[in-house]
Length: 114
Image (cartoon, helix red, strand yellow):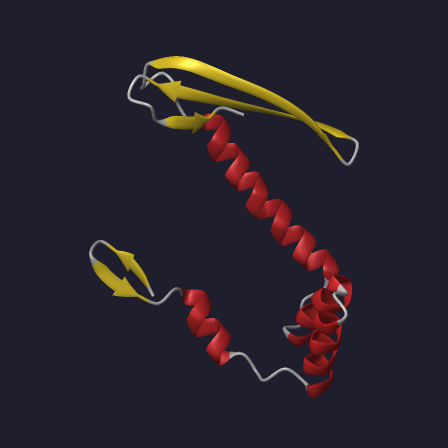
């Protein structure tokens, strides 16, 4: 349950999942076989097959969703607060250099800059 404007409601995904056809038995068996052996690829494939999703569709949905989130992140305004400190940290994760920047306001709130 989630709350919106003081009212409780069920997200649409909750209703969609209850309307979905029952996954085939092979999907459930594959799911548990993958979970038991920590084979996440098998688990992912079983879940996608049971809901009728392809890898390309999942990838497409991920790109659409992450693009929208990134666009919103890049368009936000940073001049609405006074920042008194900036923390910059860098790491190498799987061969990719990642830089994290956090700004701290005069009241101690932290905001991710990048």
